[in-house]
Image 1: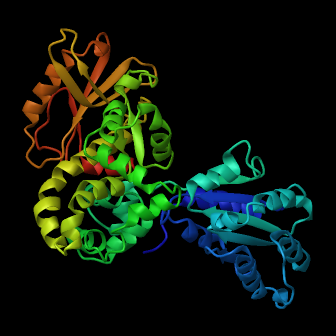
Image 2 (image 1 turned 90 degrees about the vertical axis):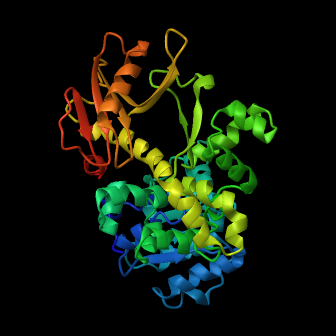
Length: 457
């Protein structure tokens, strides 16, 4: 699969590389998100690209020296006792300005805690340097602690800090050359991770790819979440337990704590870490204060992680016995439409600012609560306010091929009559459907999968 959709990041890195002063770049993000491929796009023949492995420090130093030796013959004739001597020797031997790219930088720091301080010392006197240094890593927590934390050795030294985020569903549609409806379904499994898209493209259907790569115990993604967690924590059991509960609807902090038989205060930090890593997110009702912990719900934010914990974790015993086809046919296939509808709602909320560019709507939120009469509970899929707070967009998102639209509009009107927060506001009613109906419905705007995907490109 060809390299796609990192134009903004590429432009920033190329601009940095073209600058006259030796620059320090920090690039990080979860495993398989495309960090290495991105750096390869800007690598020239004279640049040095080194991928670290988990070895002892002397072996790591020797490995980098051997890579440098291919560009500077004779570089390995000297035995370098530490990182500082290697970098200084490299600088002396360079006849032109180059870029030194170190991938999986955290592997080096694990066995050489002094390395960030060495780099700090180098870049405090960068006028004398003849190379850019681009540091890349999959351990998001460690990269954050090395650079972004105010007490970190490299804090304030980096010229660019780029955290790679997952790609959009629109990019996935382009990559897999599929329809908007198929893109939503594919994104529900693979999320925005380019390497997963590559694996998917090797198989002729979504069913075959899921069965081969995820459900089959020999599949390359069968243990993927645990490898991801190992990049950022030793306590993978706790991370996995929290995501398992949230994926199956245990979303309030008090309920999570009760299930794990732990005080709620002991879970704030690990939950926040999962949020920082992009695996979970907090959700509060539209119009509520983020500080209102009682109304806060936790949701799985990453599609692949959500799919895995929804369909793989509960069936691990059957999968280990080789029943992956049976699990797909009897568990995944019948449960997938309902699961996919959850992601569809999220995509619709994200798309609102681009669907209403002239009115400056914020991304949508859910709204739930009890009516003023205290007798009727309600829930609305999507609510968003315009920047001037004069207009409120209220909508429902349905992922079904046979939605009764008239009934859906009536149900939405019924909900609106109970919601006090919408009083004295101009309300725009919206429906998000798989495909647009042939009929036109008065006072209701209808978007379909094609509209949403286009907005999220």
